[in-house]
Amino acid sequence: MLTITRALYDQIVKHSRADHPDEACGVVAGPVGTGRPERFIPMLNAARSPTFYEFDSADLLKLYREMDDRDEEPVIVYHSHTATEAYPSRTDISYANEPHAHYVLVSTADSDGAGPFQFRSFTIVEGVVTEEEVKVVEEYDA
Amino acid sequence: MAIEVRIPTILRTYTDGEKAVQGSGGTLAELFADLESRHAGIEARIVDDGKLRRFVNVYLNDEDVRFLDGIDTKLTDGDNVTILPAVAGGMV
Image (cartoon, rainbow over all chains, first blue to last red; front, side):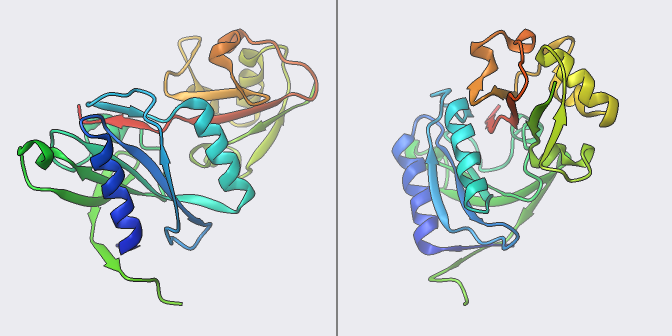
């Protein structure tokens, strides 16, 4: 299960909508081992594409250095699908390299009237996709 | 020649969980072959058909080696190499 604050949920949705019709992408980092998403880090989609996303390579290095220095890990890796459902594609599965992360997919297809808005979360481990419940809270338990 | 190599989470299964390992070689290709000799299986995750895999980023002292000489990039003692899988995907 992914537990996420309302504020972070809204930030992910806002970023996805802002970048539509391109795919939006980013990370929510959290302290190592806690599984708690805390720090919202929107990333530039270097591919600038409605069908593909890729973090810029220099930004990627900076992001991982920064998380390392702060004892953080990518708790959520999110991106949007702009015309299809919020479910990992074959491409998403083959490039999923964070077995401990929650892969959040947002579909902004509704922006074009193509379907309902979706926010879904998955784990992707060695090619196996497992959907999980998303629990939105006002704040995390202490 | 000692080169420090930072290993991403996904490849630490090959390094007994170590975040960084030492290696040697005059080029990246030689370095990855050297790592393979102690961490069997790791080379194929980085190199395919003599080239760097498209969705694996390799940095030499913070510079993406695609902007240097790719897998033929020359190394010198004390260099730092960082391996990071791309974060990428898409709807297709």
